[in-house]
Length: 544
Image 1: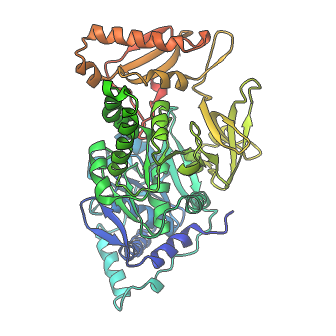
Image 2: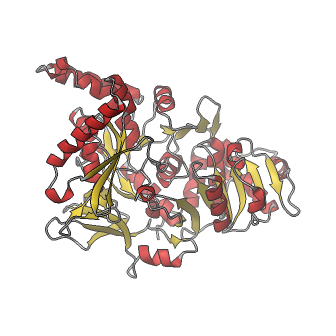
Image 3: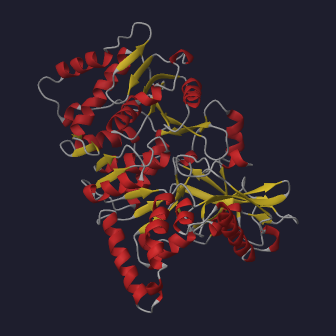
């Protein structure tokens, strides 16, 4: 158990940054740390009036916003358990999560409520809209004006002034449950990951000692806050450090690239897809022009690109941390060559999320960083020929287990406390991780050879005609599903027949690069995009 207490760390940040900007909705007014602290006390009064006890659940679902963050911090500083729900889930999925978690209070965007039948939420006692905290559903003796009444109570209590010394949250041990995170991931089975205050503190503590973010710095939050990657490093870490966090309501390239030069963030977290789109749609066409191959010209172009790319992300970022999915090797190699400040981290929800990371200045190309100091690691079932094995970790930020699912917990965490990640990796002498693929995705060749679909997909995805690919075993034959890149096909006037011919050439070229046992036998062209998780991973289970 860590000595640093998570709730006291939040409390100290409120006090130390009282008058500083804390949260801002993009293109809207800013809220100071004092403003947010006052909101915490109002919420705590609401919880008391609603009879919410320590350990009971509060669910929140909606786009990134100041009000989303208020719900999160209000719950964990009260001792309630936060249940963040991804807004991409269907109404049925959201209903199931609220019921399974036994949430008593639920705040959601109005559009989310429209997809839910409140009659199917028997345990829910309070329902409110996240946009304005309007309470429209209550049970028992709870008043729908409970928030307005609580505001009056707090205003009266601090009528002589609300100062840092007035703020003091109740002691909550790091051993207590802080949140339950439900994620479909890529397995098709949604489980509630139970994260303790200690797990959250471990992530914040490591980040504060490893990333050079400072008090007063700016951060843009566009990764979904209901996902642990965005929550830990776009919200908890910068908040504990005293930063100014600007929330973007949508994760679109247009909005992100509009916000970057205005906010000029000191730290950027991204999924690979955003960076890869910039490279393939804007940079690679320039690099493929004839004049770019003239000696000396390419170096000049790359220096110009490096400068423009730096400005695109605001110009003053310490680094861009890329995670949550595999990074395209071609894009990574290019960014490394031009000296772009990026690094690749690795984690999973069950660790809240961080497992490995290295600062950009020492990042080892092709890796996923070094095991963080709050964890110990080992490999399970190592292949003597390759040195690859399943990564297992244990330590401060490993989950408590899956909520109300003892069998799944036992499958994931063995009797010695090792969490089996399901990822096939190599570990060097410095505990630097190189990911080879998922154990569950790993396919077997005709003589029992290990085939890692991600490695084949990475090769295919380097071709202009391929937007996305998925390699599966269908009836004992290695089959690739390909969704073509429509913009590229249109740019060279390809017909459907032409697209099929181009893809066939691509598969043939990739097969020449592969050992015989992992060559693609069948190809299927898809007419629509693959369904993906909020972190842009293909939901593999849907296509097996």
